Amino acid sequence: MALQQLTTVWGEKITDKPLQEYPRPQFVRNSYVNLNGWWEYAITKRDDIPTKFDGKILVPFSPETTLSGVNRVLKPNEFLYYRTNFSLAKSFVKDVVLLNFGAVDCICDVYVNKMHLCRHEGGYNAFSVDITQALAETNELIVKVRDYTDTKYYANGKQSLKRGGMWYTPQSGIWQTVWLESVPAQYIQGLRITPNIDDASVTVEAMTNFDEPVTVKVLDGDKEIIRADGKGAIKLIFPNEAFRLWSPEDPFLYDLKIISRRDAVKSYFGMRKFACEKAGRYHRLMLNNAPYFHNGLLDQGYYSDGLYTAPSDEALAFDIKAMKDLGFNMLRKHIKVEPMRWYYHCDRLGMLVWQDMPSGGTKQHKWVTLILPNIGVNRLKDSNYARFSRKSEQSRDTFVAEYTEMLDQLYNCVSIAMWVPFNEAWGQFDANKIAALTRDIDPTRTVDHASGWHDQGGGDINSMHVYFKKVHLNKDKNRAVCLTEFGGYSYKDTAHSFNPDRTFSYKRFDSLDAFNDGIYQLYQRDVINWIDKGLSAAVYTQVSDVEDEVNGLYTYDRKILKADPDMIRELNKKIKL
Image (cartoon, rainbow, N blue to C red):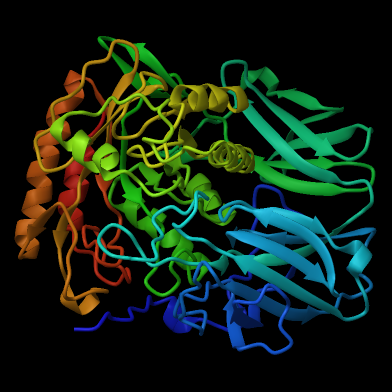
């Protein structure tokens, strides 16, 4: 059988103006013009702007997706060009107009009215460009994209030009919202928000291009709780040290307003604390100074019709709500950075997040990443850069640049509890140094420095990936022991299967009853029985099927929940410290 084009319920209702919601809830301005919609596109091998374009593409869906209207893979030796026109009302334009991209994969150049304004490298992080000098009454915007997918060392996650198994269809170009905002010449450029429950405070640092004080207000709904003026890092202390904690059980968020003489932005925060400390006989992951079991799933964030891009904001929130309803409290965002609205939904709904850095590096040496770990050789030193597919210094420098950019971008997301720079040695190097760098940038969260294997002894957790065999916990005197991947059980619903002819999973079942019984027995044996012996977290593979990989609780199109919800809820009630 041929591959099946599966459409989600949200993709079936797609409009000419998709994803119109404000894309950055952690840093909101009233100024907003959304540019999502039909643009022109061209794919060519020429490194110059074409005079003729091939057709229409629905931004922000990549050309490889069905929702884009193109359904074509961009090759490494090709260039992808986008073109659209826009005009701005005089009432919209202040002193500076900023063009914002949620993400463009992987290398892009931006032109407005033939003027080259910026080049950005890295397919997962947001960026902005000042386009003021190029503006006219009517404006032509052109974006040129080059994407090497897995043929070079840039972060590419699980994208592969030779998709199959646990490697998926590549995607290229614009895959998150494109929008415009207008600001005064002296404006607030960013925020860094740090809650501290131990001294009942929140510190707010406004990054600005001016040397004047700002006013910071903390609000509970319409009620102002605290106000302070100042420059740099402003510490606000709750009156009488009284505040409401954030947790998955009570995801309460305070609102923030930051006001300067000429500018104003809105944000929010939650009062919470993440740590890893000894509690009784074992080190445990802590939430708000108490041991807290992180009970979650691997979440790859792929959609059958949009690949990396959710068809709607409702779709973006669906997996979070569905897993929360089943009783899980954590998602490990696997080898992908999501749009900022996804983290907002986790913040408001109450879902902990372990955030992976998308993997990169040159072609993997499978004996390092796959063969040796499965015969018990899983502690190779990652200072051998060639062995770990990071031979070139440029490759390592590019990783650090993209990784630190991600840390900065996601710092204010309340729900992120853990940073995961490396997974299963895919492009891993100097993991202990990267863990130290992570703590320098963000000391408020925990770190899984080498998820799965080739543990260098650093980070906060002893991170185990266990498939095909029973769990036996590693012993660790200084870190929490966590089962950071396990399961991968599959039942294939052929009618909702991307590839009816091939199945990738870690254990197959021929009936739903057998599939659900297998999950029940697995959790009893490998999770519940180990909690009292030191297990501090569990990450089941996975939320949904992805292409050939049919080990999800949901089908790839999210139309069928294969797992028995009552059984899953029963299990999850038992998983706690």
